[in-house]
Image (tube, rainbow, N blue to C red; front, top):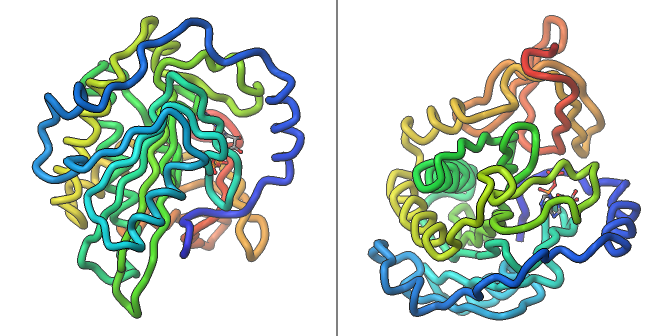
Length: 289
Ligand code: ADP
Protein backbone atom coordinates (compact mmCIF):
# COMPACT_ATOMS: atom_id res chain seq x y z
CA UNK A 1 0.00 0.00 0.00
CA UNK A 2 1.42 3.35 -0.94
CA UNK A 3 0.09 6.67 0.27
CA UNK A 4 0.76 9.55 -2.07
CA UNK A 5 2.41 12.45 -0.36
CA UNK A 6 5.42 13.40 1.68
CA UNK A 7 7.08 13.34 5.05
CA UNK A 8 5.58 13.37 8.51
CA UNK A 9 5.64 16.72 10.25
CA UNK A 10 7.82 16.93 13.34
CA UNK A 11 5.39 19.43 14.88
CA UNK A 12 2.55 16.91 14.86
CA UNK A 13 2.76 15.93 18.53
CA UNK A 14 2.71 19.58 19.60
CA UNK A 15 -0.28 20.28 17.35
CA UNK A 16 -2.22 17.36 18.68
CA UNK A 17 -1.66 18.31 22.29
CA UNK A 18 -2.91 21.82 21.59
CA UNK A 19 -5.93 20.34 19.87
CA UNK A 20 -6.94 18.09 22.71
CA UNK A 21 -6.74 21.09 25.04
CA UNK A 22 -8.84 23.21 22.68
CA UNK A 23 -12.53 24.11 22.89
CA UNK A 24 -15.29 21.82 21.70
CA UNK A 25 -15.72 21.75 17.92
CA UNK A 26 -19.45 21.88 17.72
CA UNK A 27 -21.07 25.21 18.27
CA UNK A 28 -24.54 23.79 17.60
CA UNK A 29 -26.31 20.54 16.91
CA UNK A 30 -26.48 19.71 13.24
CA UNK A 31 -28.90 17.40 11.46
CA UNK A 32 -27.17 14.04 11.07
CA UNK A 33 -26.65 12.65 7.59
CA UNK A 34 -29.34 10.33 6.28
CA UNK A 35 -28.31 7.74 3.71
CA UNK A 36 -31.75 7.45 2.09
CA UNK A 37 -31.88 11.22 1.60
CA UNK A 38 -28.44 11.22 0.01
CA UNK A 39 -29.33 8.33 -2.28
CA UNK A 40 -32.74 9.71 -3.23
CA UNK A 41 -31.34 12.51 -5.38
CA UNK A 42 -27.94 11.09 -6.20
CA UNK A 43 -27.27 11.62 -9.92
CA UNK A 44 -24.40 9.15 -10.31
CA UNK A 45 -24.64 6.00 -12.40
CA UNK A 46 -22.38 3.79 -10.30
CA UNK A 47 -20.41 5.79 -7.73
CA UNK A 48 -21.92 5.59 -4.26
CA UNK A 49 -24.82 3.37 -5.34
CA UNK A 50 -23.43 1.15 -2.61
CA UNK A 51 -23.12 3.57 0.29
CA UNK A 52 -22.34 2.87 3.93
CA UNK A 53 -22.88 5.57 6.50
CA UNK A 54 -21.59 5.28 10.08
CA UNK A 55 -22.06 7.51 13.10
CA UNK A 56 -18.42 6.93 13.96
CA UNK A 57 -15.48 5.15 12.42
CA UNK A 58 -11.79 5.04 13.19
CA UNK A 59 -11.02 5.96 9.58
CA UNK A 60 -13.16 5.79 6.45
CA UNK A 61 -10.05 4.99 4.37
CA UNK A 62 -9.19 2.10 6.66
CA UNK A 63 -12.62 0.50 6.24
CA UNK A 64 -12.63 1.24 2.49
CA UNK A 65 -9.27 -0.51 2.12
CA UNK A 66 -10.56 -3.64 3.81
CA UNK A 67 -13.62 -3.65 1.53
CA UNK A 68 -11.44 -3.02 -1.53
CA UNK A 69 -9.37 -6.05 -0.58
CA UNK A 70 -12.58 -8.07 -0.79
CA UNK A 71 -13.12 -6.84 -4.33
CA UNK A 72 -15.67 -4.02 -3.86
CA UNK A 73 -15.82 -1.21 -6.40
CA UNK A 74 -17.64 2.11 -6.49
CA UNK A 75 -18.49 1.84 -2.79
CA UNK A 76 -18.65 5.04 -0.75
CA UNK A 77 -18.02 5.01 3.00
CA UNK A 78 -19.19 7.98 5.06
CA UNK A 79 -18.75 8.72 8.75
CA UNK A 80 -20.17 11.55 10.85
CA UNK A 81 -17.03 11.42 12.98
CA UNK A 82 -13.63 9.80 12.48
CA UNK A 83 -11.64 9.05 15.59
CA UNK A 84 -8.41 8.24 13.75
CA UNK A 85 -8.83 10.16 10.50
CA UNK A 86 -5.61 10.15 8.49
CA UNK A 87 -3.69 12.70 6.52
CA UNK A 88 -0.63 11.79 4.50
CA UNK A 89 1.90 9.47 6.12
CA UNK A 90 -0.50 8.71 8.96
CA UNK A 91 -0.71 12.30 10.11
CA UNK A 92 -3.82 13.04 12.09
CA UNK A 93 -6.86 14.46 10.26
CA UNK A 94 -9.26 16.02 12.73
CA UNK A 95 -12.79 14.92 11.78
CA UNK A 96 -15.48 16.31 14.09
CA UNK A 97 -19.18 16.12 13.29
CA UNK A 98 -20.36 18.71 10.80
CA UNK A 99 -17.70 17.79 8.24
CA UNK A 100 -17.84 15.46 5.26
CA UNK A 101 -15.54 12.49 5.76
CA UNK A 102 -15.85 9.95 3.01
CA UNK A 103 -13.81 7.36 1.14
CA UNK A 104 -14.36 5.90 -2.30
CA UNK A 105 -13.19 2.62 -3.79
CA UNK A 106 -12.07 2.96 -7.41
CA UNK A 107 -10.66 0.39 -9.81
CA UNK A 108 -9.50 2.13 -12.94
CA UNK A 109 -7.69 -0.16 -15.36
CA UNK A 110 -4.49 1.88 -15.53
CA UNK A 111 -0.80 1.30 -14.84
CA UNK A 112 0.20 2.15 -11.29
CA UNK A 113 2.48 4.82 -12.76
CA UNK A 114 -0.62 6.81 -13.77
CA UNK A 115 -2.22 6.75 -10.34
CA UNK A 116 -1.49 10.48 -9.93
CA UNK A 117 -4.31 11.07 -12.45
CA UNK A 118 -6.83 9.92 -9.87
CA UNK A 119 -5.65 12.44 -7.28
CA UNK A 120 -5.72 15.16 -9.95
CA UNK A 121 -9.24 14.29 -11.11
CA UNK A 122 -10.62 14.13 -7.60
CA UNK A 123 -9.04 17.41 -6.47
CA UNK A 124 -10.60 19.09 -9.51
CA UNK A 125 -13.98 17.41 -9.00
CA UNK A 126 -14.26 18.42 -5.35
CA UNK A 127 -13.37 22.02 -6.24
CA UNK A 128 -16.01 22.00 -8.99
CA UNK A 129 -18.65 20.71 -6.59
CA UNK A 130 -17.88 23.39 -4.02
CA UNK A 131 -17.80 26.19 -6.55
CA UNK A 132 -20.86 25.07 -8.53
CA UNK A 133 -23.00 24.49 -5.49
CA UNK A 134 -21.81 27.19 -3.13
CA UNK A 135 -20.15 29.84 -5.28
CA UNK A 136 -16.94 29.55 -3.26
CA UNK A 137 -13.78 29.09 -5.26
CA UNK A 138 -11.29 26.67 -3.73
CA UNK A 139 -7.72 26.43 -4.90
CA UNK A 140 -5.46 23.39 -4.86
CA UNK A 141 -2.30 23.53 -2.81
CA UNK A 142 0.05 20.95 -4.24
CA UNK A 143 -0.37 18.09 -3.98
CA UNK A 144 -3.63 17.40 -2.17
CA UNK A 145 -4.94 20.26 -0.03
CA UNK A 146 -7.96 22.38 -0.86
CA UNK A 147 -7.68 25.99 0.23
CA UNK A 148 -9.96 28.99 0.34
CA UNK A 149 -7.70 32.03 0.43
CA UNK A 150 -4.69 30.82 2.39
CA UNK A 151 -6.69 28.46 4.57
CA UNK A 152 -7.25 24.73 4.36
CA UNK A 153 -10.88 23.73 3.84
CA UNK A 154 -10.29 20.11 2.90
CA UNK A 155 -7.95 17.47 1.66
CA UNK A 156 -7.68 14.36 -0.47
CA UNK A 157 -5.86 11.23 0.63
CA UNK A 158 -5.30 8.58 -2.00
CA UNK A 159 -3.97 5.16 -1.06
CA UNK A 160 -3.30 2.70 -3.86
CA UNK A 161 -2.59 -0.98 -4.20
CA UNK A 162 -0.66 -2.38 -7.14
CA UNK A 163 -0.84 -5.77 -8.77
CA UNK A 164 2.40 -5.96 -10.71
CA UNK A 165 2.48 -2.91 -12.99
CA UNK A 166 -1.30 -2.42 -12.85
CA UNK A 167 -3.32 -0.61 -10.28
CA UNK A 168 -5.49 -3.02 -8.37
CA UNK A 169 -7.54 -0.42 -6.52
CA UNK A 170 -7.39 3.12 -5.22
CA UNK A 171 -9.07 4.23 -2.05
CA UNK A 172 -9.58 7.97 -2.02
CA UNK A 173 -10.45 9.83 1.15
CA UNK A 174 -12.17 13.17 0.74
CA UNK A 175 -12.32 15.39 3.81
CA UNK A 176 -14.25 18.65 3.69
CA UNK A 177 -14.62 21.05 6.62
CA UNK A 178 -18.26 21.79 5.86
CA UNK A 179 -20.14 23.02 8.95
CA UNK A 180 -17.26 23.23 11.39
CA UNK A 181 -15.99 25.98 13.63
CA UNK A 182 -12.33 26.19 12.54
CA UNK A 183 -11.34 28.25 15.57
CA UNK A 184 -11.35 24.97 17.50
CA UNK A 185 -8.28 23.90 15.49
CA UNK A 186 -4.74 25.06 16.27
CA UNK A 187 -3.98 28.40 14.55
CA UNK A 188 -0.96 27.03 12.73
CA UNK A 189 -3.17 24.60 10.81
CA UNK A 190 -4.54 27.63 8.96
CA UNK A 191 -7.89 25.83 8.72
CA UNK A 192 -11.23 27.17 7.59
CA UNK A 193 -14.62 25.71 6.75
CA UNK A 194 -17.32 26.23 4.15
CA UNK A 195 -19.74 27.59 6.75
CA UNK A 196 -17.11 30.07 7.91
CA UNK A 197 -16.26 31.20 4.39
CA UNK A 198 -19.83 31.32 3.11
CA UNK A 199 -21.35 32.79 6.28
CA UNK A 200 -24.01 30.09 6.64
CA UNK A 201 -24.40 26.36 7.07
CA UNK A 202 -24.16 24.30 3.92
CA UNK A 203 -26.32 21.30 3.04
CA UNK A 204 -23.96 18.38 3.48
CA UNK A 205 -26.46 16.14 1.69
CA UNK A 206 -26.46 18.33 -1.42
CA UNK A 207 -22.69 18.72 -1.30
CA UNK A 208 -22.10 14.97 -1.03
CA UNK A 209 -24.45 14.37 -3.97
CA UNK A 210 -22.76 17.01 -6.09
CA UNK A 211 -19.25 15.91 -5.12
CA UNK A 212 -19.94 12.30 -6.06
CA UNK A 213 -21.44 13.37 -9.38
CA UNK A 214 -18.44 15.57 -10.21
CA UNK A 215 -16.06 12.78 -9.17
CA UNK A 216 -17.84 10.25 -11.39
CA UNK A 217 -17.70 12.66 -14.36
CA UNK A 218 -14.03 13.52 -13.79
CA UNK A 219 -13.16 9.86 -13.29
CA UNK A 220 -14.64 9.02 -16.66
CA UNK A 221 -12.34 11.69 -18.09
CA UNK A 222 -9.25 10.41 -16.29
CA UNK A 223 -5.95 11.49 -17.84
CA UNK A 224 -7.55 14.19 -20.01
CA UNK A 225 -5.96 17.56 -20.74
CA UNK A 226 -9.15 19.18 -19.51
CA UNK A 227 -8.53 17.89 -16.00
CA UNK A 228 -4.84 18.69 -16.05
CA UNK A 229 -5.55 22.24 -17.29
CA UNK A 230 -8.09 22.85 -14.56
CA UNK A 231 -5.82 21.33 -11.92
CA UNK A 232 -3.12 23.75 -13.04
CA UNK A 233 -5.50 26.69 -13.24
CA UNK A 234 -6.79 26.02 -9.75
CA UNK A 235 -3.29 25.63 -8.34
CA UNK A 236 -2.40 28.16 -5.67
CA UNK A 237 1.15 26.79 -5.55
CA UNK A 238 2.34 27.89 -9.02
CA UNK A 239 4.34 31.09 -8.70
CA UNK A 240 4.91 30.70 -4.95
CA UNK A 241 8.17 30.47 -3.04
CA UNK A 242 7.98 27.11 -1.30
CA UNK A 243 9.96 24.84 0.94
CA UNK A 244 9.74 21.18 -0.02
CA UNK A 245 10.67 18.45 2.45
CA UNK A 246 11.15 15.14 0.75
CA UNK A 247 12.94 11.96 1.70
CA UNK A 248 15.98 13.27 -0.10
CA UNK A 249 16.08 16.49 1.97
CA UNK A 250 14.82 20.08 1.83
CA UNK A 251 14.55 22.32 -1.19
CA UNK A 252 13.58 25.99 -1.39
CA UNK A 253 12.61 27.70 -4.62
CA UNK A 254 9.89 29.24 -6.71
CA UNK A 255 7.34 26.93 -8.28
CA UNK A 256 7.48 27.48 -11.99
CA UNK A 257 4.77 25.07 -13.04
CA UNK A 258 3.07 21.74 -12.46
CA UNK A 259 3.83 19.04 -14.98
CA UNK A 260 1.26 16.80 -16.66
CA UNK A 261 2.39 13.91 -14.48
CA UNK A 262 1.62 15.90 -11.33
CA UNK A 263 5.24 16.80 -10.58
CA UNK A 264 6.05 20.20 -9.15
CA UNK A 265 8.68 22.07 -11.15
CA UNK A 266 10.86 24.08 -8.82
CA UNK A 267 13.16 26.85 -10.04
CA UNK A 268 16.50 27.02 -8.20
CA UNK A 269 18.88 29.41 -9.94
CA UNK A 270 19.57 27.82 -13.32
CA UNK A 271 18.12 24.49 -12.36
CA UNK A 272 14.53 23.23 -12.75
CA UNK A 273 13.95 20.46 -10.22
CA UNK A 274 11.12 17.97 -10.60
CA UNK A 275 9.49 17.03 -7.32
CA UNK A 276 7.12 14.08 -7.43
CA UNK A 277 6.20 13.86 -3.75
CA UNK A 278 6.93 15.78 -0.62
CA UNK A 279 5.63 18.28 1.89
CA UNK A 280 5.14 21.72 0.49
CA UNK A 281 5.09 24.88 2.58
CA UNK A 282 4.13 28.16 0.94
CA UNK A 283 6.70 30.67 2.16
CA UNK A 284 5.39 34.08 1.10
CA UNK A 285 2.44 35.70 -0.64
CA UNK A 286 1.45 35.23 -4.28
CA UNK A 287 4.22 35.87 -6.73
CA UNK A 288 6.77 35.56 -3.95
CA UNK A 289 5.84 39.02 -2.59
P1 ADP B 1 -0.37 18.67 4.86
O1 ADP B 1 -1.56 19.54 4.91
O2 ADP B 1 0.74 19.17 5.73
O3 ADP B 1 0.02 18.31 3.48
P2 ADP B 1 -1.95 16.34 5.33
O4 ADP B 1 -2.56 16.57 4.00
O5 ADP B 1 -1.42 15.01 5.66
O6 ADP B 1 -0.75 17.33 5.55
O7 ADP B 1 -2.98 16.77 6.44
C1 ADP B 1 -2.68 16.59 7.83
C2 ADP B 1 -2.45 17.94 8.49
O8 ADP B 1 -3.57 18.82 8.27
C3 ADP B 1 -2.38 17.80 10.01
O9 ADP B 1 -1.06 17.59 10.40
C4 ADP B 1 -2.93 19.13 10.50
O10 ADP B 1 -1.91 20.11 10.46
C5 ADP B 1 -3.92 19.53 9.46
N1 ADP B 1 -5.33 19.16 9.74
C6 ADP B 1 -5.81 18.08 10.39
N2 ADP B 1 -7.14 18.04 10.37
C7 ADP B 1 -7.54 19.14 9.68
C8 ADP B 1 -8.80 19.67 9.31
N3 ADP B 1 -9.97 19.05 9.62
N4 ADP B 1 -8.82 20.82 8.60
C9 ADP B 1 -7.67 21.46 8.24
N5 ADP B 1 -6.46 21.00 8.56
C10 ADP B 1 -6.37 19.86 9.27
